[in-house]
Amino acid sequence: MIALVFDTPWFLAALVAMLPVIAFFLLKRKRRDVPVSSSMLWQRALKETMARTPFRKPSEWLSLLLMLLALAGVVFGSAGLRLGSGGGGRALVLVVDVSASMSLEHEGESRIGIARAKAAEALDALKDGDQVTVIAAGTNPRVLVHATADIAAARRVLDDVQAEPVGCDMRSAMSLAFAEGRDGAEIVVLSDFCHDQDSWADLPDQSATITLVQCGQDQPNVGITYTDVSADDGGVSVLVRVAGDGARTLSLLIGDALTDAREVVCGGEEITVVFNLPNPPEEAGEFQRATLKLEPADDLKLDDTAFISIGRTDPPRILHVGAADPFIMRLEAAVPGLVVNNVSPGSPDIQGRYDLAIVTEQTANIPPARCELYIGCVPPGLPFVDEGEIAQPELADWDSTHPLLRGVGLENLLFARARKLSVPRKAIEIVKFRDGPLLLELRADGRETYTWSCGLNDSNLVLRPAFPVFIRNLLGEAIHRVQGRSMPCSRDLTFSAPGGDAAGEHDFQLRLPDGDERTAHLLAGEAFTQRAPQGLGFYSAAIDGTPSSELGTGLYSLAETSLKAAPPKPPEKSEVEVVSASAWTLERPVWRWCAAVAILALLAELALWLVKNRRI
Image 1 (spheres, helix red, strand yellow):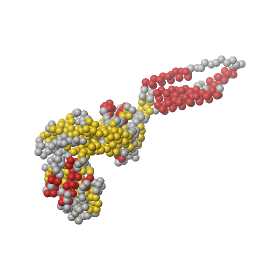
Image 2 (cartoon, one colour):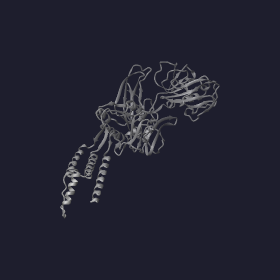
Image 3 (cartoon, helix red, strand yellow):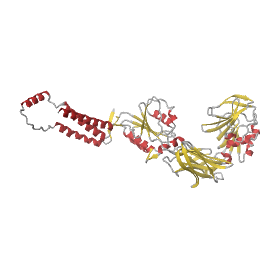
Image 4 (cartoon, helix red, strand yellow):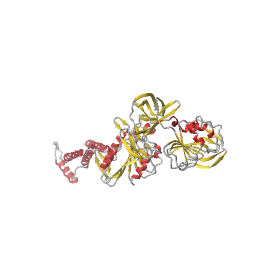
């Protein structure tokens, strides 16, 4: 069913102009007096004509029709005639991109503002009996409005949609849209399409009508994509990566004081800038706030600032899972301040968080540590397969540039036996035997794991100075006790209450960047999670009134910073249309057709007039 909709329906009152046109056409025209020699022949011809044709000539009626058609075209076009579907159960699914790049403002209008305006137009076009679903497409897509016929309520929710400092998981958003939209639903995606284009490749084929509405075009931008803090014997450094296209000044502020500034010129690739950090915190529990700024700010402001909290950590802690071993306990003497705790596999008494877990006996439990080292066994929960034993293996090759092997000499190591491992595709082989890997690195599922395929007592590693150096490399920043914490705004933030001897209930308090506070009562070892998305700034946690940890946030998304708008190609079975936001509407404007009809009608009338006068 087709519905006629007018932008300015009051203009239809101009249709009354048709009445005088018809009236003038029906009025008899005044005849001219012409002297003739005799009227007899004229009267006879007139009587014969009137007898044969009681009506006007067809050409005159055609002129009236053309005049009325031209007038109707002008009126309907001026009234903004649009064609839409009528009521009766139409289903519409609106997918609104809320990622950071949608906050970009250009010439006083943001991309998210354009998306909201076009979505509101779509809601205005719905009729009684139609239903709408609204999905916000961010890092974790969510349904804001679920299949409702209450258009007013959907509009109120849509008015509150804002861009967030996160990326866009469009694959999950479209999968959610397919699940929410029933058969025959129309899916409209309002986005700048700055997300990963590969996310469309694995979408299931669906018989759906998909409209991709392009909100914004490619635009130059420079942003901060990565930060890190490293400490060594030479001091503390802040590493920053900047990407985009253009020139900016990158400043480092400690507190509110400008510490250093560098000019950065980006040509589409990431560039790295390193700042030396003067006077880092001296005591554990002290925090120093560092702010990175790109100046002057550009249209996308969310990636122009990043916040880092730098502090001294407690002495490094190692958890040894396995039978007590004197060589591992001697690490306390080799690394000043190091604390080593030993537990048996499957022990339920593990409390707190550790910097490194050394596992020497197979276990089914994942140890609570930032980094895991498995010696002669495989990590639980990861796709490693033990395929047997390698007798008297020989070293074949190793990556001497890997940070883990810095200062570690492998040339004089001897091996009696080792496990032959089948490893995941993403694992990195750092050291290789002739018959299989010796040292593997795998970062997956939020874990940092290293696997040494030779058992603790099956080589002379623990007898050599290389062993404590190797462990120091694994501990990394924890050795120097200086750590910089800055998380992407798209991640959940987790804060843990103290465990071990600090049994009982604890009062937890989290201060947000905007000054708001979150409080909770936590038992020993429990965690408090602040769900994403996070705001830009510093988050300070306190336990029982004592500051316990602090971190900063940043956007840190290369895809969002690039602002490369490129609509993808969705599943082949879907009916897909790509259109710019300025040209898209749920109801099709037909004023151009009305204007064309009016012009053609006037041209036809002019042609009739010329033919008629030529005969005369």
